[in-house]
Length: 297
Image 1 (cartoon, helix red, strand yellow):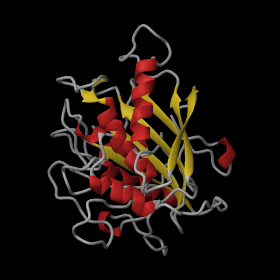
Image 2 (tube, one colour; image 1 turned 90 degrees about the vertical axis):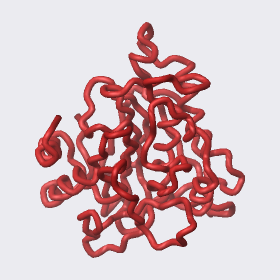
Image 3 (cartoon, one colour; image 1 turned 45 degrees about the vertical axis):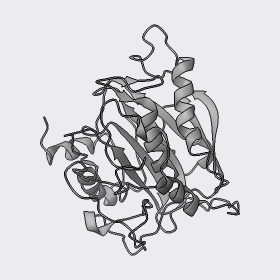
């Protein structure tokens, strides 16, 4: 166990984040907090650029929803995959690669949106924001099988975006293979976390959705061992996607990289509180010392 206060402070030397939004502490025990004004019957919540309700000030900027400024967004898979899922191979297995791509493709299926997540292949890159050079940044999915510094989250998505208008510049997804056993296949295995169930949820964060209060949605904040329900989108998840990127949304060009921030979203398991709000609050204090997003370990 670690001390709730000491843990984020210990991480400051290894992570140079400025983390404002899309954070949820004790998601298993606490009711979901609404982050934007919207009809009560909606089953989706958009990620905002800041949230004073959890101690992340807006610094004079409005809290606005984050979004990708283009309709086709590429992503890569770290070529090493997970040593626990293919222990005899040094590179990712075709079966695991297939399940990862299927999780992203789930969000490509709704016909009410032209938004498209394009698989670009594998990479040795583990994902980081390279400040001031968009051409050098790629969006990466990676298993972290050795060290996991983010509490007990099952997985975590890190967004880098412009705090003035919410344009997403980069997104990386990490899976906690250090603390959880993952499985693939047609049905969830007892005592494991299903790769597709977990990753489909994280891809929702990748595109700009926050946690939903409806436990039937893919974007609900928690997942059980062996659960596979989040592999398929709920109508509320689809409504969220198509609200952000409806059919007819024009292509836009990214603006200059200034006023850049980052935010984290995580999925947690039963009885394992998500400390990302606490982590974000602690790291936000680094703003006077660190002007940009992060330095990876």
